[in-house]
Amino acid sequence: MIDFIKRFKFSYEFYNFFQKRRLSHNLEQYKKYGINKRFYSSVSSADLDHLVAESNLHDKLNSRDELPKKAEFKNLDSITQSQLLSWSENGYAILPNFIAEQKVDEINAEVNRLIDSGTVKWRYGNKIMFALKHSKLLMSIGLDKKLNGILDLLMAKEVELFQSINFKTASEQRTHSDSIHMSTFPNGNIIAVWIALEDITEKNGALHYYPRSHKLPYVMNKDFKNNDSRFLLGNKTYSDYEDKIAEVVKKSGLKKEIFTAKKGDLFIWHANLLHGGEPLLDKNSTRKSMVFHYYAKDAVCYHEITQRPTLKTKFRQTDLPNRTR
Ligand SMILES: O=C(O)CCC(=O)C(=O)O
Image (cartoon, rainbow, N blue to C red; front, side, top):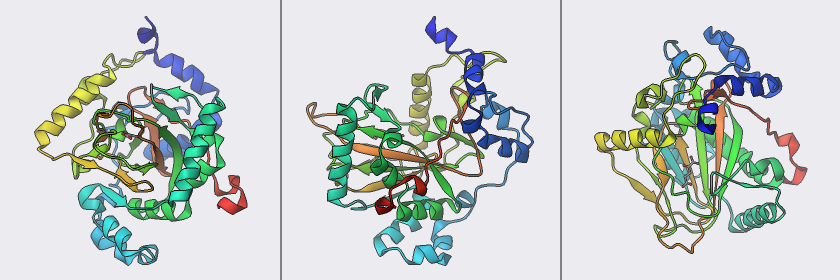
């Protein structure tokens, strides 16, 4: 019964009606693309697929040719440069030892404090969503100038921090693309940063990914027959989506890679890079990590399955104490 009620678009629209400040970012984009929607309206790829938009620069151009022209790129160390150069081919970049060990210890202590004080709650089993809203330290990592400069370079435009997710144990998430959760029009206007908050091996549920899968077609509602009607969301489940992705992966012949990370390493992935979490083999072990997702500023932002426009909170450098900026 609850599942059926959750399918009513109207209930989301009613909630959204009172969230104008956090939803109005889409209005400018609706105008630009001639989309006839209110700030509170449901929105999904079915409303947008027929529209024509310029390809994103970062998808059209090759990072190997473009990045060396940028002054910001020239200031980066050679390991970072070589990772960023292969972005267009691979759909990911690995930045070893990006966050100092002591800073990672501070982050872990902060996450424990937030959990112990009841400030944050577990969602979807083993995730802490948006902890950055309660911690200047976590927010300062997501807003880190060097990191944001790298993301802007990869996206060839400005991005803005949307959310954080913290894990203390393995996610064991099946393979997926972030674009089903944080969808954009045009496609490809999000980017994710994953941070190892301890050494991660194949035993404690490492991150896995499929190099070059970002070039596969985006899998959206219609691709797993999650068809909606005027008033109701489609009746397929998230595992139907995951089954579809498993089928896509099999057909693609792409090879899975596992990221056995060291504490402080960073993994950046493209909006459509297929990734997930390996099974937890050592049941007593932790797998501490933190993910930040960023939207490009100039896209329609929404969530495909629930067809909700994205509720945004602005996270700014000026919200941080001077010493962490
Ligand atoms: O950390 C993981 O194992 C997966 C995280 C993930 O898939 C995500 O945040 O999109």
